[in-house]
Amino acid sequence: QVQLVESGGGLVQAGGSLRLSCAASGSIFSINAMGWYRQAPGKQRESVASITSGGSTNYAESVKGRFTISRDNTKNTVYLQMNTLKPEDTAVYYCNAKITTQGITRTYWGQGTQVTVSS
Image 1 (cartoon, rainbow, N blue to C red):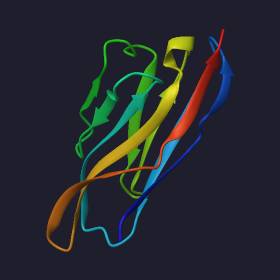
Image 2 (image 1 turned 30 degrees about the vertical axis):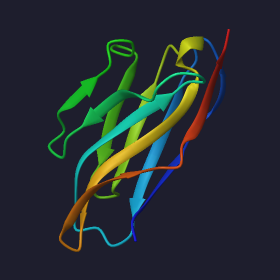
Image 3 (image 1 turned 90 degrees about the vertical axis):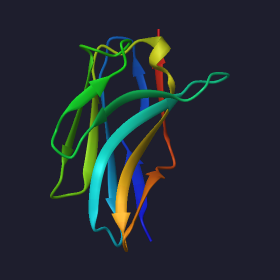
């Protein structure tokens, strides 16, 4: 069974930084793309950043230049470094990963971690 476990959320003042981590565990054959999404109260879940197995990245316009996604393939872990945080970044952040296990590829989600940015 595959699990994604996130950590690193919390409360920070505007202009501050946080680093989120998401580790995949279980019977994993390979991990393709990994990414971060967020969902603010009353809003739809939106993509924040993604990274391929080869390291190519993509960002939402709202976070470009402030957030950096990276991954450590030896640890099956994806990170999101968030700098110059704004109150509008407040949301529950979810990681996801496209994982192949026992010949089947599907997208898995973490449980979410709360990020709150105070003004």
